[in-house]
Image (cartoon, rainbow, N blue to C red; front, side, top):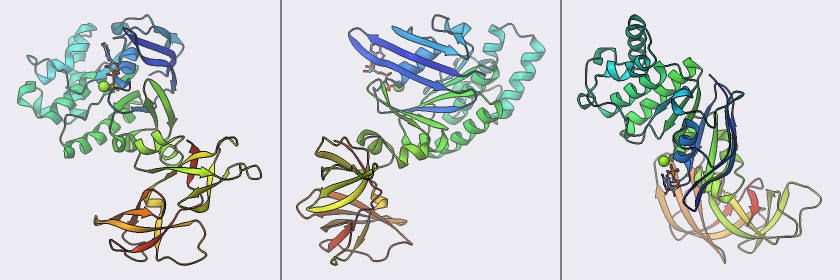
Length: 357
Ligand SMILES: Nc1ncnc2c1ncn2[C@@H]1O[C@H](COP(=O)(O)OP(=O)(O)O)[C@@H](O)[C@H]1O
Ligand SMILES: [Mg+2]
């Protein structure tokens, strides 16, 4: 096991800089996820850690060892790919045994370790099957056993669940977490699926065009996104332009802003020189009421769409002289229900965040 230190990594393809001076420290035994849209550089970063790509700048350390120029074979990594990458002409047993044979492990030890590894992923009975005779979930379990059987220092997984159907994807989350926790292995997991990232990770690095937009625990990213990009990528959020009122000198973390003609209170660390800001408000943090006078932090609007979703009802509200805003009321804490065309008042909590425009 080892910590991973990515120190100012730069990677270019032709004139295109895909990783821009990217730094990240992953402590020994932690499960970190790289999350971001297609093309943001997740695979490129993983391949730099694996040694398939040589970076154009920066350093990579496993613990205190500088492995920047060390070949893949000598980095001691386990890797799992989206398309499994199993040898089609080898049985499950031989696929898992491959890395041990390459390392000249003694035959009886190979038999024992492969047996244990297949047991752990629940495939002991399928040791003699070929990949073509297995389901996607079973193949990915073989790939996982093959990566872990060599007891690597770090485990790298590139969208390992993307080719599985929805039910198997959920099951495999648990299989992976159980195995990596038991092995205590440092893991870098790549996904573009925000729910997967939230459910599995100790920390998530949200990537945006070759940089890390925010690193944090799932709770930090969901609760205090640093910008609209992160807020909209993790969960869903109303991201609305607002006008900032007199700069917040007295209370450092407070902001006053105008939305739909009303002055509201919010939370924010916005530069006092700017007059334009962005409100980040999660639909489930907002609530609705029948319009009434003297309600603080409320804006007026009209219901344009109501969608009943069982455990919640989603509304689109057209604000008076303002943008549209999405509100979700959960079954159970719904005080009242509203129909399309109803005039409503949207309550915007004073802890909603205002960030720079
Ligand atoms: N071998 C390569 N040669 C040229 N461009 C590449 C290569 N690999 C990736 N890229 C480019 O780098 C960017 C990031 O790709 P990638 O790391 O695969 O993104 P992600 O895994 O986040 O979808 C993309 O614009 C892609 O076209
Ligand atoms: Mg990729």
